[in-house]
Length: 526
Image (cartoon, rainbow, N blue to C red; front, side, top):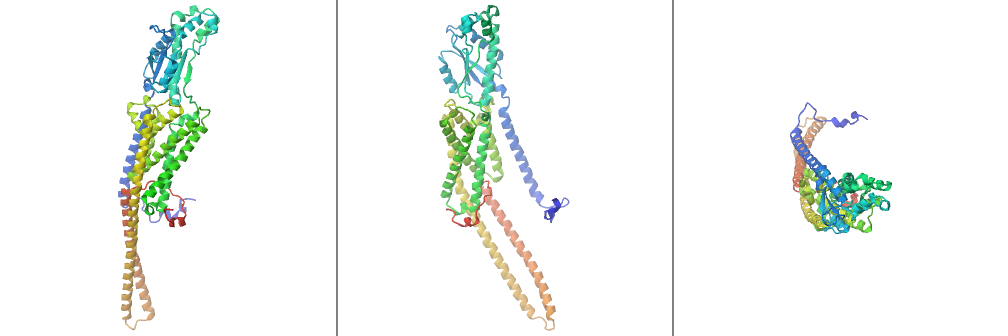
C-alpha cells in the first residue's frame, strides 16, 4: 500500500507554488511555540544539571563527627586518634567530608553520638574505642595480648544508609574507609608504638599489618537495588499517574456534559471523592511494589502503613495541583507547566542540599522534597526528624490545591453553561435562517409560477417545461451556494465564540473514554 492509495489526500490542496492565507496564521504561532518550548527545556535542563554540577566539590558540606574516646582526658590524644587526625589533614579539601573533632564530653557514650547522627546533626559519627591505643600497643609487644587482640574494636562509623543511600555510600562510607586506610599508613609512620623494630613475634606482626578494621553501626541498612529509583522514577510515575486519571475524568465529564447538568457542589464532592479513592489505591500499589522488591530491607508493617498514607497525601495534592494548572492557565501553557512541575519536583530530591549550590534550597518549597524527607524518617524509624516542617508544607499544598480546584469546578460550570447557551443560540439562529431562506424560496417560486401563467399561448408544452426546468436548476444551485455561505459564516462565528470561552476557562486535558450513548441521555446526577 503506497501513497497513491490515499487519493483524497491531495485533492483541492494548496501546492508549493501556490499561496494561501494559512501561512500568516500558522508561522507566527509555530515560531512563538518553538521559542517558548526551547527556552523552557533549556531552562529545565540548566536547572537539573546545575543541581548536579560540581557535586564532588561540595562534599565538604558533609559533616562527620569524630570522637576519640581513647583520649585520657588530659589533652593527650591516643596514638590512633592522632593517626586519624594526621590522615584527615592530608585528605582535607572540597571533595572530602569535613571531619568535626568533637570532645568526648559532648557525647559521653557512643549512644549519644548515635543520637546526634540520628537527628541529622551529622551525616556520620566516627569514634575511637576507649583504651584502643593501649590495647594495640600491648598487642604489638606479642604474647597473649597479641593473640587476644580484636581489630574490630577500634574504629566504628555510625551512619544512616537510608538517608540518600546512593549518595551516602560514596560521600560517607567510601570516604571514611579512605580516611581509615590513610590513618593506618600514618600510624605505621609514627614513632613509639608504631615502630617496626619493636615487633618481635608473628602475632604482633599480624596485628601491625591489620591494626584495625572499620566497623559500621548502620542505623538503617539500605542496599537493595530498587533504592536507586525511590527519589526519581517513583516520584515521576506518581505525578504521571495523577495526570492520566485527571484526563480520563475530564473526558468523562465532557462526554456526559456533567458541568452543564449537575450542580457544582455535587460535582465538586464526587470529583474529590473519586480522586481521593484513586490516589488511595494508586499509592497502595506504589507502596506495595516498594515492599515487594525490598529484598530483605528491614522495614515492617508499621512503616508500610505510614508510607502508604504519606504517598496518598502526596498523590492527591499533586492531582489537585495539576487540576489547578489546567483550570487557571491558558491552554497552550498547561503542558509547559506540567513538565516544569515534574522536573523541579524531582530535582529537589536528586541530591541532598549539601551537595548542591545554595540556590537549590528553594527545593524546600516543592512537595516531592517534603514527602521524601518524611519517607526517610519513616524508613529509618525517626532518624530523619524533619516532619515538623515537611508535613505542614505538604498539607499546605493540599489545602490550597483543594480550595482552588473546588473553585475551579464552579468556574468550569459557569463557562460550560455559557457555552451551552451559545450553542443553543447558534442553533436557534441557524433554524431561523433556514426558515427565512425557505420562505424566500417559496415566495420566488410562487412569483415564478404566476409569471409563467402569463406566458404566450403559442409556446409548446415541451419547450416551456425545458425552460422552466433550466431556470429552476440555476435558481436551486444559486440558492444552495447562498445557504452554504450563510451556514459557513455561522459555523465560523460559533468557533470564534468557543475560542473566546476557552480563553476564559480551560476544561483541562481530556482523554477519550467509552460511554454508552443511551447512558448519556439519562440524568447526569445519577
